[in-house]
Image (cartoon, rainbow, N blue to C red; front, side, top):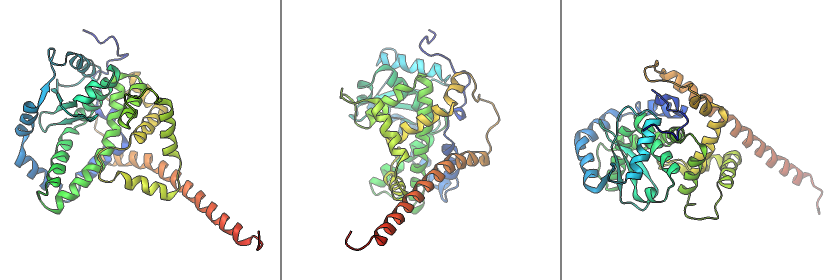
Length: 326
């Protein structure tokens, strides 16, 4: 049946249409980390595709027309809207956290936690499924799988290839934070409505099941987080996400708003987007796009830091020049 809800089926859309400029540059940089190829070969040689897939076959429920039919219907709509090149399997696993993921090496698949399936409205779940399908279509599942394995082994104190694995893991996490921004865009394109993604960010931040929370207020909070702070604040923002695989929900909201305001979302929904088979973007172009995106942010940060420094100096001078006794 045609998907009457979606405003446009994005026929032959290429993942480059939604990828954040920092994502592709970070992934290319990741591939250049010393020891990356060795760690990749070791992890895949030791584990392989089959054990990972069997683990989920044994511990999760595969979605089908008769197993979680609501989720199956939403999955079919999302795959159709983003014109998925294959019917990637979808599983629901018992887990009380709001989360989902895309894994696999040669044959990717998607996992949705039971809590997320239970606590989301249809459009919110479409956003999540589109987000995870975005990971698959962007080729992220391979590296997400590698990251999960390395995190698990590191937690058990199991050395794979020593220091090289630690370097690769840190680089993987840094890339993953950029990849999440890309796939938030894919999720929005799957729904073709900005609101469900914003609501999901609010739920990820702790605002689910609470009638008093307000999405508009959360968006204003995101803008405040992004737009304020001196140089020290900017440093702490970086330190706060070290070792994490996802940016803070407020950052994701701010990035989505910036994407909407750039006009890119409207152009894609209007039919102006990269298609599969279009020439690939050279690495230097990816770096150039990332440099432009983050250069503007860096200049803004520097300007705020310089302004804060001037205020400190002016305040000091004012106090120093004030007559004694005042």
